[in-house]
Image (cartoon, rainbow, N blue to C red; front, side, top):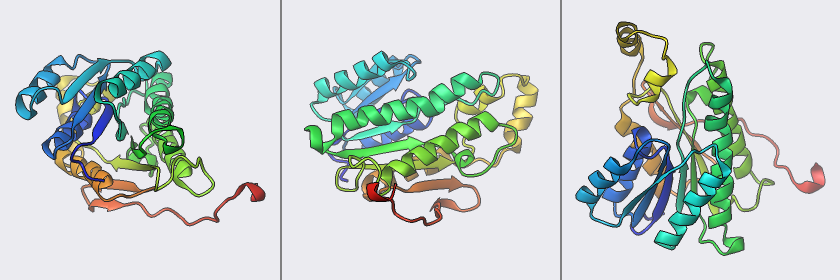
Length: 261
């Protein structure tokens, strides 16, 4: 997919990976980005408008766990830009003390955003096709004893996205219609790290953070851009300290068709 002229909607777009992905798209000539975030994004709109030019970025204050908020954000994005080509379900948290909120944001909201992407991009219903990027984590591939709820939610993102992409899944999610891929980074220096351990004192958090093997945020953004530009489908791209950017190799399984179910 050529970045030039495309329009993207990014949840959690006012900071972290979401903000970095938006900047990378604009830098490469995207027509517009729509930033969806529960936090204030006006400063990001001002920053991007000054750097990349006016009328290329819009912000919607929205709760990704709300059907009405998300429907409104998608609708206003399409009304403003008259197109939608990429949806990145990027918003996430990591707070084991509130397991319901983790599941709501890290898994349920990803499903909600994916289904809305289908509504607005499916060629079978008047859309242009496009790409969905669902943000999981290496915690969606490996086991994480200290964050079991987070791991469960991220495993859900991987399973949901990969299942949609397989033959026999929803026909809208096809390489010739809506491609769907998964991003699985390990630890990076974003606000989610602090939020995942709110019980630590500043001194304890500093020690904890220094103990983590961090990947550069720029590597994660580069992985996002590969999924946009290389026309990949059904892939989980990993970003780790040990191997950099590579692809997870899923175990092969028989293709399913309705007659076999």
